[in-house]
Image (cartoon, rainbow, N blue to C red; front, side, top):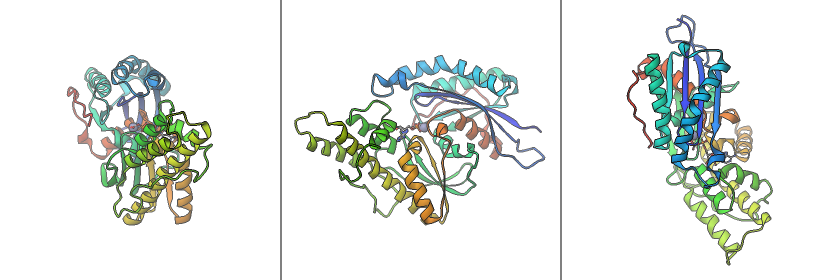
Length: 349
Ligand code: KG4
Ligand code: ZN
């Protein structure tokens, strides 16, 4: 039995992604090889939502509808395969924006119905979690994963595909959400994370002091809402009459914020590794693209003789490749995850 070709769709928020991943069939006589990404296409709606300062769900859904067919055609063209070659169709079932999810779901389910192929609904976070497996030097199981996206901040123990144990998570805002809200406070454009990171590069270390929430708590949980409030208070102290902050001070605030959040993320990741007795850390999700976070984790890894794996930068933020990959790996691990198409159900939460 030859390799399986899995087509994947991502549409949970403001990126439309399509990808084709090939993976050895579980019935193949040879040992299963590593999955191969044949092609992926992505359209980001950042420009569409920028004027509104955040994602407008209705506009997101409409744009997913417009983009999905051209992206699929392009991905197929690049892969050299046709729809007839596709063995299963994976799509993001949630969490995310209901209307946006429904576009990917409806399209994938309808296509699977027409092609008479099974579907594999994928949890968006599992896509992020497994995305480092797309890199040239993929991590081996088991590992600890630090999942830091716009909607989630979690530490997980990963023993294999589908074998995840939650070690800790945020009690309020996600790390990316904290970046975005703080960026907004500083008058930066959406999406705030990368803009704030860029501004922070010009800021001075320790010019402004911010708290490190839950840095010394016994558990592996996080809390970032207080940090955002602390930034707000500092900004008000610096300009009591509501005048605009000058560029240098804004850079200092951005730097202070980034230093604080990164310190907490690094410290808790190290704690999770120590508690679980593991030496491998995998970082995934949009905030995993943050350069300062990567630099601090790499420095900690050298000190403690640990390995840190990151997804390729293009697979840190939302994309179709991670969904096709997660669907393919799920299918190989347990063929019963594939089901007949026709259930148009998403799970926004
Ligand atoms: O994983 P992702 O694309 O979408 C979700 O599933 O949420 O993550 C998006 C989040 C946003 O909050 C964005 O501001 C943040 O990741 N982000 C960053 C950086 N790049 C993206 N945060 C900090 N530094 C970055 N370089
Ligand atoms: Zn995501």
